[in-house]
Structures are given as structure tokens and as C-alpha cells.
Length: 223
Image (cartoon, rainbow, N blue to C red; front, top):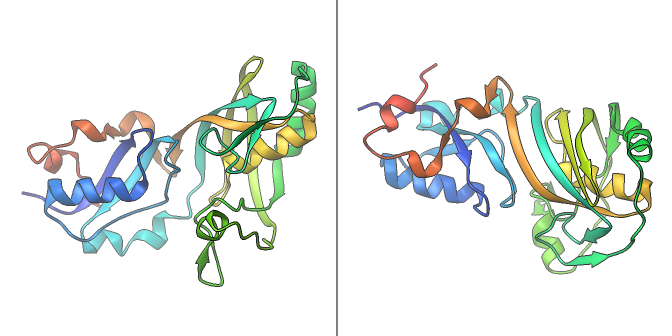
């Protein structure tokens, strides 16, 4: 039985990236398992799982790839986490037009500067920002230069669905928050799906609940 390789998983909603590692350790019996980029618990979609030490060593080669997302934003509200799972506050009943939104989205095309959110796994001085945020500690974060392409898929107030292609390290939640500021309505991420990670697409992924000891060997990609 093959026990090493790349496994493409469609992450279920409300599960952490580490939860996938935990489940796959049970299924494979392999202790050394990693991934090429986390997803928030809220998010679903492409998780590139690396099974076995020969593949976890390849993490640096895979983790910097560009990503593709589809996200639904909820306008008129904000939260401390920039998504629906945080402490939500209603801030505005203003209804922006599609033209207002298209104009604001010009700020999220090409090279942009983005400040990572406090509720993120990014580390500063060895501390995860999310751990500090849960203690009520806010620290200064330096802007990061990124490249993005953002398009409207649909708009039915208060829901705005976007397609986002972006460089590694982009926080979709921060795009939502910053867009809400520009529109003067507030906005947060209501739903989020990663549809692409580097060369790997969502239609190539297997839902976690469909992976078992009998089929895992056939799902592993050997490179």
C-alpha cells in the first residue's frame, strides 16, 4: 500500500486545517503529515495535504503558489475576525449600487498593500496574531505587498459574491474588511471557498468524508 504522496482534499466547513491532519493520520497510519497552506475553519475547498516525510519536505516548494477563491461577503456588518464567525456588529443600512462596488474594486486589482488581520496564523516575534487577539492584544502589523485580481460574480444586497485570484499570503477577510470601509457600509466574509492552490483545482479534490483506508492509495499523487 502506498503511504506517501500529495493528497488533494476538499476541506469541510467548520473544521480546522489541523483537524484534517488528525483525521488523515488515523486513516493512513502515517505520523508525518503537513499541508501547503491553511484555510480558516469557515472556509471550504482545496487543501494540498502532504503525506509522509518525503513530501512534507517539499512544503517550501508548494506553499508559495498563487491561490484562487470564491467568496460571499455580507454588507452592512463588521466583525472582529472580519468574518461571520466573529463578534458581529451592524454598522450601516446603506445599499451601494453595483457601480459603487465596481469602482471600489479598482483598489483591489494588480499590486496592492495589505495589513494582515489580527485574527490570523501569521507570527510576529514568535507569537501567532490570533493568540494575541484572543487575549485582547493588538500589535502593529507591517503592510505586505501582494498581487490580486477581483471580479464580481453576483450581487443581491446584502450579499456580494466575488472571484479573487491572488498571490500567496493574501487574506480574503482583509479584502472584505477594506472593501467595506471604502463602501462605507462595512463588510465581512460570509462564505469562502478556495477553488485553486497553485496547479491544483477544486474539481480534483476528494471530500474528506469520502477518504478511507481502502481508497487512499488510489488518491495519493506521487511526484
